[in-house]
Structures are given as structure tokens and as C-alpha cells.
Image 1 (tube, rainbow, N blue to C red):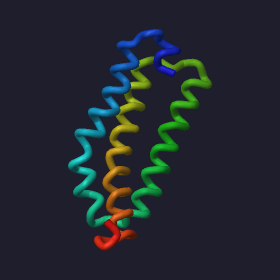
Image 2: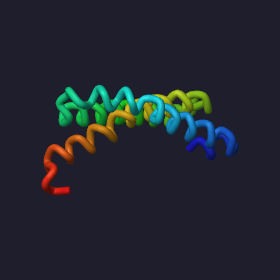
Image 3: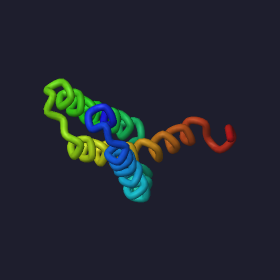
Length: 102
């Protein structure tokens, strides 16, 4: 969508990179936050947050007022929320399988 709206590979790289860097930056914090929490509830909340970000993106695209900087902000939000999903999934699977299943 970024490439179609801007026709710029630079903006595509910025939006993609921002999401990845945000996920990388928030991962240590997310790992610490996941340990004491209810992993199932956390995963449900992550999915709700991602759905909300995607609904905002869809509303912007459908309204026709989308700008590249808005995709950058959405990429930040997706990266921050996704940082919590990875550790939660891994901890949930490890809790279900246990140490004997590895």
C-alpha cells in the first residue's frame, strides 16, 4: 500500500524498517512483561490491538486521505504490539508442551 500510494521505495523501506526497529526495541521489555502475565489474555489483547491498528489503516485508505507519515505511525504501533506477541506465543507453547516435549 505504501509503494502504491507514494511510488517511492524509500518510503516503503522507512515504514518497514520502523516496524522492525520498534519490535526490536520493545522485545526486551515485552519479554519481562510476558513472564508474570496470563499469556492467553495477553495474546487476545495483542490480537485486539493489531485489529484496531488495521482498522485505522483501512479507514485511512478508504477515506483517501492517507499520507506516508501515517503509515510510519501505524508501523510503529504494529511493531510495538507485535513485540509482545512473540514472547507470549513462545511461553504459551512451552507451558503447554512442557520440558519433556522438546
